[in-house]
Length: 500
Figure 1 (cartoon, one colour):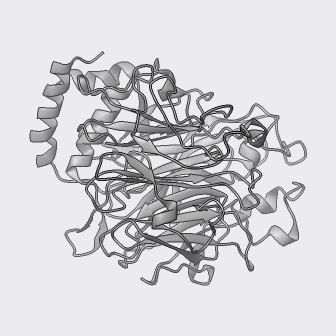
Figure 2 (figure 1 turned 90 degrees about the vertical axis):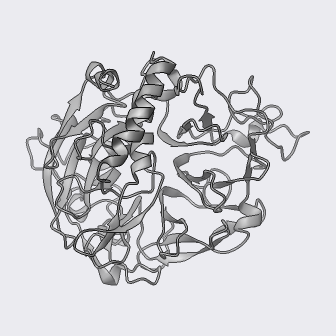
């Protein structure tokens, strides 16, 4: 365990050394990349940059909490960071995509709607009686060491106030930002679940920091109406496979976009929550793309925010023509696109570029297309000044998985660079391909990729997380400087701490 003295030395070093280094470009929005900044580069164009302070925070998060023996750190699907109890130490939100469809049967009829009263015995946000726990949890960093230990850190009584009548289920990637502009971290939790007995999808949660120091669920007071706002339970209610956050309208505050699997019109929809600067969100339809994923950046360098959004690639959809999901009516939804921005907070497939192919399985006898970069990091990994993609890319029905870089030419055209097998399949072809997302043992993918410069060489590295049953969960990949990566061992990772 890294002692407090070592932690102090690391902090001093990073404060004096990392801050003098040039800040590094990557897109904010999910996981560890929780701060946002627009700055101009040398040739006058605007792009996303990583603030120097966040570089320090992320480095400390990796070194001081990187411990595979910690149950909470490995038994999760998503992880994100922030300072939630205002002690200056980085805390963590961890979520799990367990879907308990029997939740209504577990409600205590005598309790009705409950208010979460978490304490050290609960460990997470529990109902008063008879209901399984929420599948999200805050793990508090310990001030003495900077480490976060699940067995000793928990929701402090009064840290969070929630009034959801059912458990928050299918919790997706936590979005962490100062949504209400008070200087403290807030939390938005989308739900990656379909219906779940609600009739409208999964319930979302929106926790805003309060002057008294706790986080309060604020959907009713700070959203209140608009697209997919359910007034019965006062929550956004939508199956949002992924969500993203950023200053989409460039007014200095953080907005939210939801990737929805609702089928509206001819090609689905995306939903935006536009912030007024005080955390009040206006919910409206802002795109017409059916999407499992959504990430944002200025991919073509014109100064407007573009969206990467979509489902299966069209090459994947065409190849697996015998798949039960291969229906003429669903052809449009199975495409992956860059939807070009024009400053209106609206994104339309009529103004987009399709990414038809995201790679191939490497060890199958046939040339079988991969389908979707289900976990996607946006960063300038090859150091050429534009925003590239690194995908945790899967085959149909989550069969097989690879880490792949998609390198941008500066105009939003992407080519495959580096490819690393996480789980290569060999025994399948078009005829015997698994027809379901479950009942096969060929998973090999990660939900999230978190950027950081681990070794201070100016190149963006990343850590993988999610799907803890997969080998390599929480592994760190070091950038060679050209968008190719190598893994770094636990021993080497800790060496970075010792050099200080």
